[in-house]
Length: 305
Image (cartoon, rainbow, N blue to C red; front, side, top):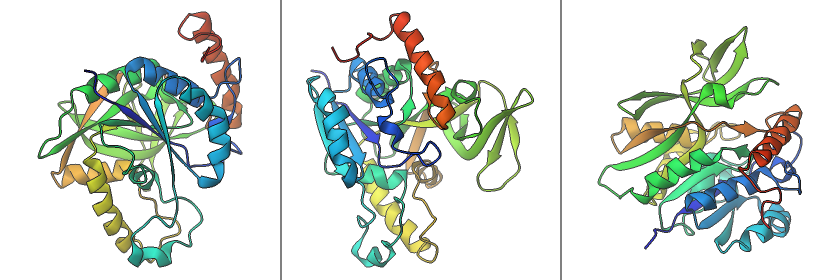
């Protein structure tokens, strides 16, 4: 019997640089969104349940568009709301901030909906089918252990850039296939070289085209939720005097778990090319790439017919 696999889609963020809800910006010939292609690829890879993490005020627009289409595909669809107030009682006085707490918090919001191995993606990234295939294969064979093992799908950095400016990427350092460090950086091609500028202000460095970066395509067991709950408490306590800007980010949480010897994080390579709409000017190249993939037979012209 096939194992249940859930895809958790982080869709609570607004695309500030793009100027709107980029998760529902049509890119396909029949009004399909990037998120449609993500779910289509995930179903092909063996995922049979989708959990959307969204803002409560966006529920109707999600339900009436992508939700309706996906529900017809014979897979389970769930919604959870990312709320700033969903933090421990003693920290409620910090819930006056305006933006969500970050990706670690978004994943934790789905704790009551996910009891099986699961993958995580950003709503506004086109990951390519191979990324889902290698992740699903990994998750089907992943067993809970005393020391947890998780996975990041590693994309060649050259396959994740845009011509329209810098992008945020987690540059991966690994040993024997396992993550040792992840450097959150602003990455851009400058004078023929790929330059990474760490977000913590440390010295910039160049990376080869085939260096692995994390695009937030990840795989976990449900034991992750226990780690997230514990880490969120520590995070809020540590940042209570600077709670407006701090972010509870999944790459940093994973790195801490590695350092504390609580988890190993496997870096699984993919040959897939990433597409996304970081800037408004990116949309045209995404539309053209999808047109070509349809012409090459990778996707049907009307995705859900």
